[in-house]
Image (tube, rainbow, N blue to C red; front, side):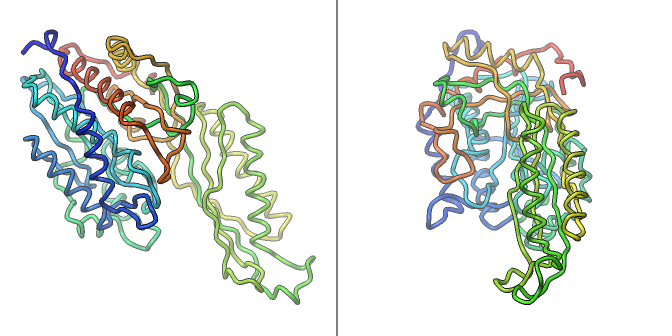
Length: 424
């Protein structure tokens, strides 16, 4: 049926029900969801996703790092349009982050099937492995391996925070696939997501068209001092790893203050050793998260971190080791895909504005191998990575409508979309 004569409608209730059902896998007694990458809960979530894909008559492909792809065949052999996100979660998560992008993509396929709509290009729905980076670092591991910036064998050898090996756990849950990473070369990539920030909700704007994503630099920091008795060691003779860590953490905030603009600086995890009330810490570890949409500024933040470490070492008589976990540069999305989203939103009469994502997403990795862009819908209060994360069913349906219309626009094009490195 010609696409110009048909505007198939998303089933918002069906989409919401699928989000609820997936959130019951790994549900926590105290509220929220936990499906860390490659755990048994993740396996059960993957099983449910694959079952839904099979119900939609999609061909299933799993690659060497466990990325899952469901393919709805088009009428040609042209490269497919890929939609996706992830279904792994943080330790105590809500039901929308990541999952919404995958299940809304499935709802688009469901809608096309219901209305017997054919597309020139195939449609690929992707669920990338370990986007969150909680159990295994770096985050966005699956999409990094997919685009070739993280070698598969290196990925498989990564040790998790629980001492497990990525490759072993992938085998254990039965999702060590045989398809080569990157074997499916998309025509374009679209990712739908809740905003994970307050702007759209505060401004009462129904849709964000994401044209850029901030760069992210993650670090492990280890401070080595001398453990000693808390009551007998004079204050002036201490080499207190805990105190030095606190000094450094305080100054890390000043990185963001001094650089200004969109610079962010966060310490998210801290641990003291031996962690006893009457012992001066002999070691302290913490993490650093630096973000900016300007790569030059992000590099300056990284340099400032190194300078702060040397200053605190001298002040506290300690040794500080800094290990960079990842550096993902900022990305500008492809203008043609961004425009396609805007045109779809306007065609549906939905207000929108362009936004920059302050969180990392698989889309910024995919932008290195194909034209890509993202769609945001409001998250109430800007809350995410929390059981309190909430987006109304109406807003979820709005995002899925725009995703479907943009998919149809791209999937029925013949012309090539040039990937220009200047976009990324």
